[in-house]
Amino acid sequence: MTGAPAPKFAAAARVALADTRARRELRAAAAVFGRRRAAVPEPPDWEALRAAGHAIRDAALLGLDAHLERLERAVTQAGGTVHWAADAAQARRVVTALSRAAGADRVVLDDSLPVRELALDAALSRAGITTAGPPARGADPGGEAEDGGGAARVAVAGVDFMVAETGTLVFVEAGDEPRASGGEAETLVAVAGIETVVPEWRDMEVLLQLLPRSLTGERMTALVTCLTGVVPGDGPREVHLVLVDNGRTRVLEDEIGRDALRCIRCRACHHVCPVYERTGGAPYGPVHTGPIGAILTPQLRGVESAAAASLPYASTLCGACADVCPVRIDIPEVLVHLRGEVVESRRARPVPPPELVLMRGLAWTMGEPRRYEAALRRGTRWARLAARGGRIRRLPGLLGAWTDARDLPAPPAEPFRAWWARRRR
Amino acid sequence: MSARDEVLRRVRSALGDERKPPPPVPRGYARRSAEPRADVVALFTERVAEGGAAVRHVGADELATAVAAALWGREVKRIAVPADVPYGWLAELDGVRALADSPPLDAAALAAVDGVVTGCAAAIAPTGTVVLDGGRAQGRRALVLAAARHLCVVHADQITATVPEAVARLDPVRPLTWITGPRGARGLEVLVVED
Image (cartoon, rainbow over all chains, first blue to last red):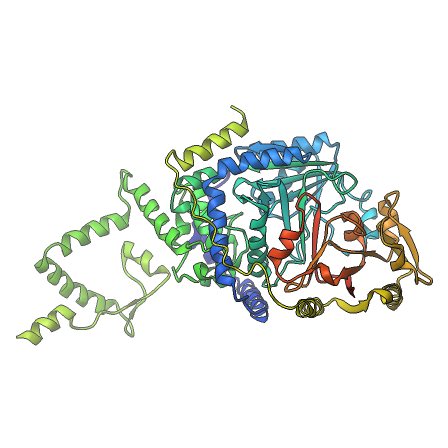
């Protein structure tokens, strides 16, 4: 799965920004979400729910090993089977092997995040298994028989929450994205990131209020399914749960960065982000997008690649995402923390990056008042020459990268320090 | 090392040896409600209607007539019902064929019915949600989800005033289906029985 290195965010965003139709659609989508959310008044205990959601997700992460073991016991006791995958390749092998063992040549696959993250569609196709999306519920059921013999024997579905206490898998379906968790298939393969566990059943009383409002702006999503193991006579005869790490434990190592794993995948941060509203999802990479993607992807993949390292900079740090996050992830704080990581990881390189050279030069200049004042006078003169109409649109040379995405106000004719000195005379 | 041991080893190493216990969960949100029952039932009705589903209040003695009228109004000719649906609900049907899901109807039989009539395990007033758990008069999930129309009978005492009350009342070991509003072509109609 290697190819040309992925482009940096700014380069990929340029393509997206040129697509005016896509930008109009993104703006319209954000407006629809805003209207829907505004139509449903915020419940009076919303802040208390956010505080509880924050604490529940923290408790899940800080005791993750114990919760996963408890979950495994509960699922197994209820007649399900638990599989573990340290990385995406292992997860793909498990899902493919389970589909084959069930004798399926056709698998129903939903469009959930773990399914996309693991590229299960492509993996199953390579194994000679046909994949199909789940049927829209309420669609004419007669149409299904025409495309090859009714319901598929195997359904692969992404899990939204798993309850350690009871072994319950929770699937949250918005009206327009049907999940494969319905009762039709004989074998259900549920795929979950290990971080989606919550300690107790009663924690769902909080998350099932936070997620719907943040996901679709409604009081409750159209369909929520809670499934605990195998139920005789109802639904799949085999239930498999695949627990996937694939970089998550790496995120867990970082005490600040791990806050990103609280995410309940609602996309509320997307709808309020001024950067996402203009670029859309594509420049963030294939899986995690928007502000949450900008803090998750660099941690899951590491900041060594230029594409991942550019993501913490894909933000104006306006803070709208932190205000709207139902589990109170402080995305700007993590962004700044990750910018620090990116700088640190480049400090050790044999050829220092331009910013570092510039900053060292500035440190030398500002270390001595006379040097600083002389530089200020000279700099002001040059800067005023480069300005047009009070703004500098393009800086020369390497500094030009800074003015790629912003302009710079021209400095006043007389620097503050010169004015101060004159006034006191 | 198995994948299981490897993942658990990584989790433990990421969290380190000196773990702080997580702070307790502040549960200061609305868990119970002291609202009068009549207001809770009225809120449920309002929210179901807001969601676009038809909703009617009926007395227990009018239920059979109301079921028949609702089906007649939608020109429903064939329905599927859970095998243990109370006989009284269907006593007034005229010109509607009811197929009991026992033995389980196959996909072709389900595709041929116009709707399904069920009860529920709980309902949630502030969200206008009905929750089915496969218990009495509710049937299996495939029966409920496959039908193009769903007529759901809710007893007034099943309606909870908050989401936490419903979560406390429901048994997570049973298969739960939370249905809120009609979806696309799938119709939902609710009869609230005042006992």
